[in-house]
Amino acid sequence: MAPAVAIALIAGIGIGVVVATLVSRRRQPVDTGTDDVPGDDGVADLLSSAFDQLEIGVIVANTANRVVYRNEAAQTFQGTHVGVLLDDHVSAVIDEAQTGRSVARTVELHGPPKTWLALSADPMPGGEAVVTIQDVSERMRTDAVRTDFVTNISHELKTPVGAVAVLAEALVDESDTDVVHRLADHLVEEAHRAVRTIDDLLKLSQIESTRPGDTVVDLTGVVQTAIARGRAVDGGRGVQITAFESPDDVWIRGDERQLVSAVGNLVENAVKYSRGGDAVQIRVRVDDNAVEIMVADQGVGIPTRDLDRVFERFYRVDKARSRETGGTGLGLSIVRHVATNHGGEVLVSSQEGEGSTFVLRLPADLVVRAPESETSLSVGDTSSSQTDVSRASDRGTNE
View 1 (cartoon, rainbow, N blue to C red):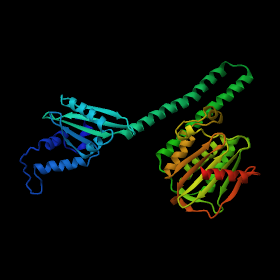
View 2 (cartoon, rainbow, N blue to C red; view 1 turned 135 degrees about the horizontal axis):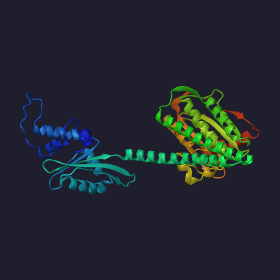
View 3 (cartoon, helix red, strand yellow; view 1 turned 120 degrees about the vertical axis):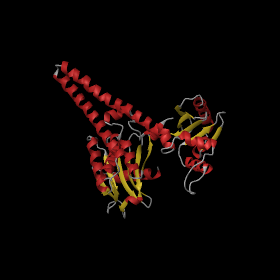
View 4 (cartoon, one colour; view 1 turned 180 degrees about the vertical axis):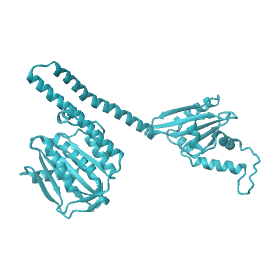
C-alpha cells in the first residue's frame, strides 16, 4: 500500500486493518476496562463515520469484485457527470489489486470541466481490494501552468540572448566603422530587451508570491507617476495624455508599488499602441461599489478574438509591434495579478481601429477618502482635450 495514501486515510492506522473491520465486522473480544469504549459494531460505525469526513474517496470491493463499501467522497465522485467514465477505471484497478499487486494511476476525465483523479488500489489480506480516489485537478493545472511558463520564458530569453551572441560574433570580424556602430546599436537593443523581460518576470514573481502592503495610497500620485512613464515611452510622437481626478483626491488602502506598476503598465500600453497625436485619457472614479481607474486610448485596438487572452503571460496581439515597442508580453499579466491581490479585477473593451479601454476596478471598502466632484488635470498639449475626454469617458462608460 502506498504510504501517502495510508497516512491520508487514517493517522497511524493501517488502512487494510481498518477496512477489513468495515467489511467483515468480525467480533473480537476487546478488554477495554471501561464501558465508554464501543464494541466491534460501534467501532465499525465510528470508522465508517471517520471515513465519511475524508475528502479522499474510499471504495472496498470483495473477492467477487463487488463493491461493498463507499464513503461519502467516493459516492460524490461517482455521482457526478463523469461518474460513468470513472467506474470503468475503478473496475480496472480493482481487477489488478485482486491479483495481489498495488496499482496507482492518474486518469484524465474530459468535462467540462476537465478533471484529473488519482486512483490507488491495494490488495487486502482476505482477497478484497481497497481503492482511494483523490481529485488532483488543481495540482495538474498548476503543473501545466508551470511547464508552460518555463517553456515560454525559455523562448523569450533565448531570442534576445541568441541575437546578442550572433551580433557579438559579427562585431569581432567587422572592420567597417559604420557597420560596427549599427551592430553595436542592435546588440545594446537586444541586451535591453533581455533585461526588460527579466525585470518584468521578477516583478510578476514578486506580485504573485507576496501579499500586498496595507498602506494609505494617494491615487493622484499613482496616476501622476503612470503619466510620467507614459510620456517617457512616447518618444516625442505627441500622444496627448489627460487625467481626470477629484479636487480632494482619492486615497485607498493598498500596496503603492503594485498599484504604480499596474496603472503604469496600462498607460504605457495605451501610449505604445497609439498613433502620434492620439489621446490617452485616465479617469479615477468612485461609487458605492468600487473605485475605478480607467485608461482609454484611440489606438489600433484589439481584435475580439484576442480579448480573452490579453492578460496571459507572454501573449501578444501583434508580435511585430510588441517587438518594435519593446514589450515583454508580461505587462497586462502584472495588472491582472495586482487587481486580484487587492480583491478587484481588470476589465477591457476594444474595437479595432478605434482604441481600447481598460478599467482597474477595486473594492469600495479600500477607499479612505472619496471625491466630491471631478475636474480635469492635463499633461502636455491639451488644446482639444475636453472634446476628446468626453468621447473617451462616454465610450468607457458604455463599454
